[in-house]
Length: 417
Image 1 (spheres, rainbow, N blue to C red):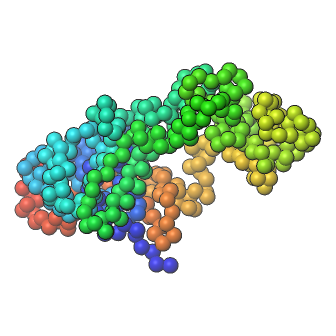
Image 2 (spheres, rainbow, N blue to C red):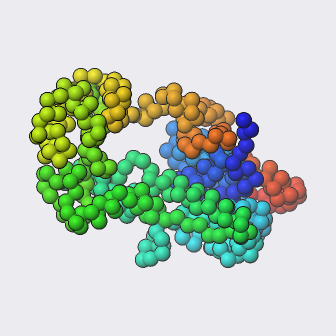
Image 3 (cartoon, rainbow, N blue to C red):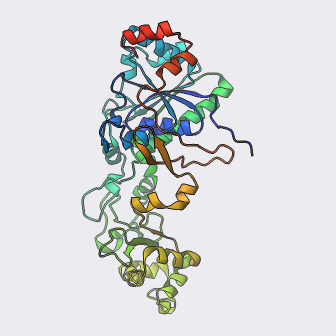
């Protein structure tokens, strides 16, 4: 098999920071693009120093979002810095940014000027909101989850809205932006021109909540039978929070397993899918349900789901969650153990596929990071450590822009690099 990098030859000017933008550019780097991360001289990406676990060493927050990139320190607001930035625009294929609205414009490089400098440039941005009354507002992870519909539909019944631990606002939007960039690169092959790519965090979260928008429309035509509210309290005029009820039309619930008294993750999610229900009933010792009109149809069970899952739980509490999974999977009963971050970090299968990777860092030492979740058969991703601040400044200025020692020294005297 010939191993090749899918995006080899694509150069990305990475003007991103924190999480949403770096998620996007890290995936492009994993695919083989040359990602040149621009950072403020002396400071760098704010996450280098956020949530540090080792003094004066780049944080895991930074290292886990900036694999496979090159770091260049640059201040485009200086005269020399603006010249260097203009040259980088000429030499790059994609510019990605997730600054506050208008930040790149204020540096003196609005989209119209970028198009003049490099008509093939693809300019991609993460925004908080799309055009409308909120488009100038800053957005962070939890704000995106709240304004995109996730929080209103997450949480226990009749309790507070909850945000999820999955970073669907930041990383979710970054992944969406990758799709837009790849589409624009493909289009450029035909048109010869770059284009503007934008992805709003509110829009990305709403896209990930599309089944809830589906249910909002269904709700207008009658109650949602698969929601617990169908039995215990009715519905208002909006899709409610439904605890751990399945959103796929089949009843599901988290149930306790052996050891739950001391292990906060000794649980498993079981779906009582209609096609697999006979096997599930038999294995938990309730074969009698299969001939009982009170239980042997999905419609009849709707009114007894609390009892059904209580009986399932009596069985799951007799064994650990992995044994439950090993028992239910051959029966085609959908289930999933609640896996802790510790369990995932130690899972050998994830190491074998490159989903969890151990990387060596010159200052931090060895650390774990997430590898590329998108697997290409001919273009496997090799995860390299994140760059030190400004580690590749001279290298990029010489090899990409062709600057000589005198020009680099002059730029350094100005504080441009």
